[in-house]
Image 1 (tube, rainbow, N blue to C red):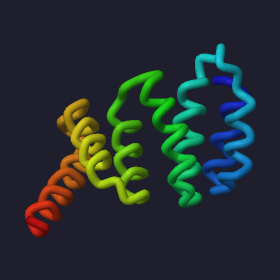
Image 2 (cartoon, rainbow, N blue to C red):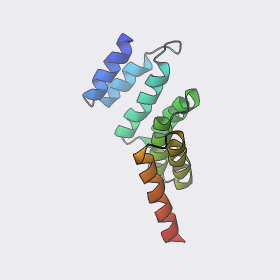
Image 3 (cartoon, rainbow, N blue to C red):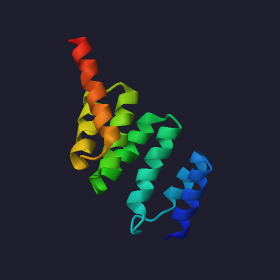
Length: 119
């Protein structure tokens, strides 16, 4: 495993998200860990409650590889920024990509219940 990526992960585990972001940004675009680093930067920004910045990184990670974790976290970040339509779309995408993802299923169902209350 890439040494810089491991250092970023160690900082993340210590909840030192700002320094983890700095470390992840050192990873070259040519590295096999680049996509994971971009995703991890997004999750660090979520932990720091900087959702607009999280969206930037998570969108990039999702473009690089469309997986349910990136889609779910995009949904969460959109929810936190108040864009419920996009949040629902990405939660639903996460659930579609992995039908066993219970968190995505719960998020979709909770958002649909909320929509029904409004209407």
